[in-house]
Image (cartoon, rainbow, N blue to C red; front, side):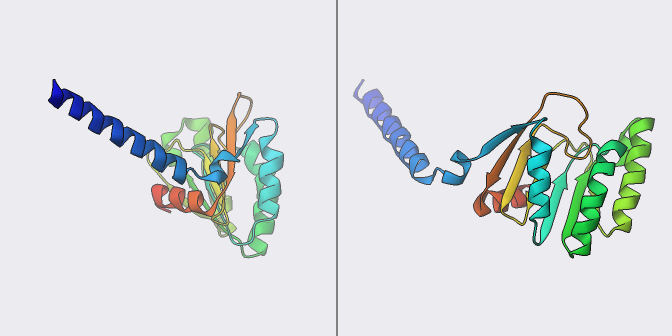
Length: 170
């Protein structure tokens, strides 16, 4: 009985210690993040793109003509300012015929602009990192969104951006 009590006390002490560490290490940037939906995301995201100074990384599994028509003028201006743009997406061969053709065309145009395009098999992440300090992540396919109910979180944090960059391997 005494051994069980000591074991329980040790587990409780470890749990209290963990909670104290979590409380100390809670990132204030994450706590002050902002949420956006499909109606508010693009205006805020495009504003961030216009203020970009060095680099944009976008992960979007799907790419459609409709979204690329919106983004190509922005991407062109960013490239004219020597902003590095990286897009990670699915290989177009993973899509059905309609999406495949849209993706192939979009990738070709982006590559002509000097945008680096990477393919990840089975890709499904939806995120963007701007200047290694602004993180957008959620459920919205940035380069293909059409008409579904979505959520995106914006976090301004160098620490979280670095953590995400390390995680995705770019």
